[in-house]
Image: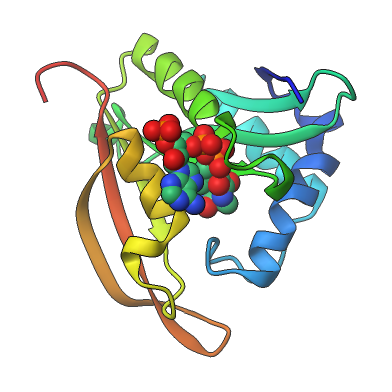
Length: 177
Ligand SMILES: CC(C)(COP(=O)(O)OP(=O)(O)OC[C@H]1O[C@@H](n2cnc3c(N)ncnc32)[C@H](O)[C@@H]1OP(=O)(O)O)[C@@H](O)C(=O)NCCC(=O)NCCS
């Protein structure tokens, strides 16, 4: 499998994006959503990112054209002084995990954010309360990528009848941080 990365096409890609995301919503603590967004909602979310001029990339299997992952940067907070801070989101289909695609997607998103003059990227990683933080795959990915843990919020999410925490990660995009 040789994935190629390309900018999202919100309408035609929406079904595939929704299909990748839904199992994480339904079966895991990785997303704190509890009802999978419809393709129409995924399309609207992608359009909102592009409308801000921010990157939203999909990875596609070059041989089949199947979308196997996506990543994007969205505004961290709406108030204007936060305008140089973005929040990352990244989802790779389980079939395509562990072979470098997450790193490639993150490289592409961070490169574009740097070109746009963004200074800081945040990632909010929600945790399964039954898995030790150091064993959480997303925690390991973000630490391995160079994010620093800057926050930990206990009992901040309620899913599957359990209280779950989040970790806040920060990546400096610009020199001088
Ligand atoms: C987390 C995720 C994006 C990582 O993508 P990936 O394609 O599997 O990761 P890669 O193969 O590019 O690995 C990148 C690095 O992270 C490390 N890593 C990735 N998954 C890991 C895991 N489960 N355990 C330990 N390290 C891991 C790799 O060792 C690799 O390090 P290296 O580049 O120094 O060799 C992907 O597994 C995923 O989509 N998971 C489910 C959704 C999710 O958790 N998204 C993040 C929500 S905050």
